[in-house]
Image 1 (cartoon, one colour):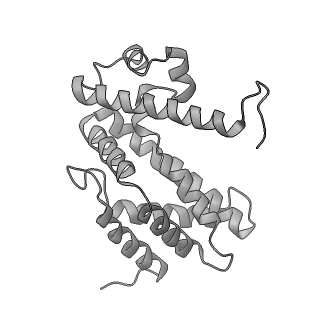
Image 2 (cartoon, rainbow, N blue to C red):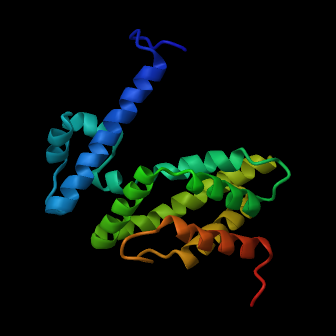
Length: 203
């Protein structure tokens, strides 16, 4: 285990950072639910989490990002990278998503549902979600290109990534369910990606 320049073990430092980040997010979501998103300030969130506003901004660029930052995307990207080299791009995404979502804890699913309920109820968050779709395409396209030994901006990798994200949105659109996406709903994602993988046959 390496040590930081301050003499604190790196692993311990990362755990403390993760704990602080989780506390900020938990108190923020609670305040958003109790008093409304617009009525909640960064100062209130920081006070509830017992951190300074500057510490809040070290973890989240804005209060919108507390809701919108999706920690699962990076985990899915890592799982795609871990798929065997011979697995085709869409199959790699399908297998990676199944692996990640099958192993999400009940607490992680509850966090996801809380996030989704807030997005559905706050217009400015819904607008930002549309922008995040582009970011998701960028992330997945980069991983697909990397696995194939292609440049990050490869055209075919972006098309495949965009098609996959579109397929997922087609079966789990924003507002798909009032209580958010449930674990069983990812069977629909698997079916959509399998259809894409098979060349989109009708019927």
